[in-house]
Length: 235
Length: 293
Ligand SMILES: Nc1ncnc2c1ncn2[C@@H]1O[C@H](COP(=O)(O)OP(=O)(O)OP(=O)(O)O)[C@@H](O)[C@H]1O
Ligand SMILES: [Mg+2]
Image 1 (cartoon, rainbow over the protein chains, first blue to last red):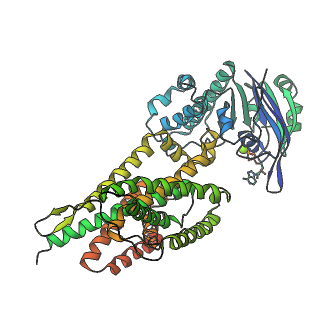
Image 2: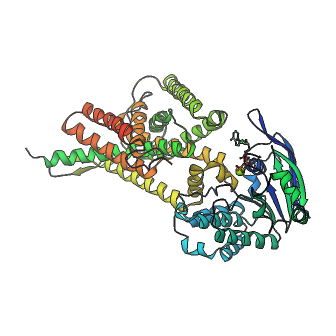
Image 3: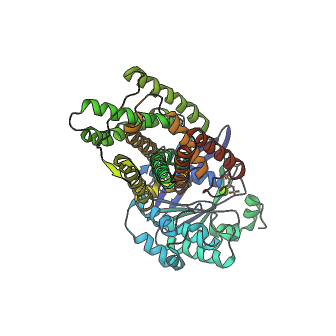
C-alpha cells in the first residue's frame, strides 16, 4: 500500500532547475533506493519533500492528505523522519537533547525511542555526552535514532553510510532492514549500487533532477547492463 | 585618606551598571545568536521601558512602589508586543536578511524615537524610586534601591539561563540557533521561535529601562548609550554566546564603575572602546566565545 507519493515536483535554485517532474511512491515495509551521481539532485529531492526547499509545483500525498505547500515544520509532524546528509546533529547539544527534539516533534510517546535504543544500545551510555564528540558511527546511529523518535511512518536517509567503516555500515544496514520489517516505508539515498543491492526492494535512478528509470531489485541484480546504463557503474 | 570606602563605592556602582547592562546586552545577544539579526533599535526598547515607567508613575495613584511594580509588569508586556509586531510587520517580510535587517532596524530606531518625542516632548522626566531605604556602611550610606536593581537583574538572568537549559522552549531556541533548517526538519516552528526571541530580547531591555529610570530620568534619546554598551558587551563576550555576554557585561560594567569613580567617566568609555578594538583585532570570536564554527 502506498504510504507516501510525491507527484511532479519541480524546484529551482535561482534560475537553474534542480528537480524536474520528480515523482516517487513509497510503500510500507519496503525500501526504495534513490541512486544518482554527485549533483544529481538527490539531496534536493529530500529537502523539497521536507519543505525546506520550496517546490514550485507538485503534490505530496501522505496517506490521503496532500501536504504540498505546508510550512516545513508540519512535514515531520505528519510522520516523515529524516536523516540528512552529513547527519546534521545539533552537535552542541547532548545526545539526550537531540533525541528529545525527536520525541517532541510529534509527542507520540517513547516507543520510537525505546526501539531506537534497542537497535543502538551504545547510545544509552552516552546520553549526557555532547553529540559532536561522538564517533562517526555513533553520530549516524544518533541521527537515525533521532528520526525514529518521531515514530515515523516514512523515513528518508541521505547517504547514511558515507564515510563509515564496513562494520559500522553493517549496523546501519541492519537497522534499516529492521525498520522496514516493522512496516515503515524507507527512502534510502545512495551513490553506490553495491551499497543497496542487499537491502533495496526497488531502485530508482536519478540524473539532472529527474527520475530516469525505476526497477524492482531483482531486475537490477540480473541485468548489470542496467547499472552501466544509469550510473556508469563499475562501482 | 582610606581607599576602602572608595573601592566599595566603585564596586557597588559597577555592579549596578553591570546588572542593567547584563539585561540589555542579553536581549541583544539572544536576538543576534538565534536570529542572526543585529537589532539597532534595541536601545529604543530600553528607552520605551523607561518612558513606560514614567507614564505609569503619572497615571497610577498610590505610593511610588505601586506604579513602579505596575511598570515592571506593563512595560515589558507592552514593549514585547511592539517588538512582536515589528518582527511580524518588518523582519519576517525581509526574510531576516542580515543587511536588510540592519537597515530596517535603524529605521525602526528613528521611528520609535520620533514617536516618543512627539508624544511626550523633549524634556527628561524624573521618576521616584519605589522606596527609599539607605543601607548604612561605616563610611557612607548607599541606596537600597540599587541593591534591588542588582537582585532583580540577577534573578531574571538566572531564570532565563535556567529556562534556556531546562525547558522545551529553551531547547527549541538552542536547536534553532544551532541549525535552523534541521530544527524545521524536526517540527520546530522556527518562525514562532524567532518572533518569541525578538519579543523576549525587547522585554529584557524594557525591564532594564524601568530599573534605571529612578536614577537616570526618562528621555527620548536615552537609548543610545545602552545600545552602544550592549554592542561592546556582545562583541567582547563573543557573538551569540550567552555565558560570554553575562561575563562581559560584568567585566564592562565593573570596569566602568571603577574607572568612573577613581578617574573619570570619559576614561571608562575610552577603556571599553579600546577593549572592543583589541578584541576585534586579536580575538574576533570574543573573550569567551569559541573559535569559528
Ligand atoms: N543551496 C543551493 N543553491 C544553489 N544550487 C544548489 C544548492 N544546493 C544544491 N545546489 C545544486 O543543485 C544540484 C543538486 O544538488 P544536490 O545536493 O541535490 O545533489 P546530490 O544528488 O545530493 O549530490 P551528492 O551525491 O553529492 O550529495 C547541484 O548541481 C548543486 O550544485
Ligand atoms: Mg546529496
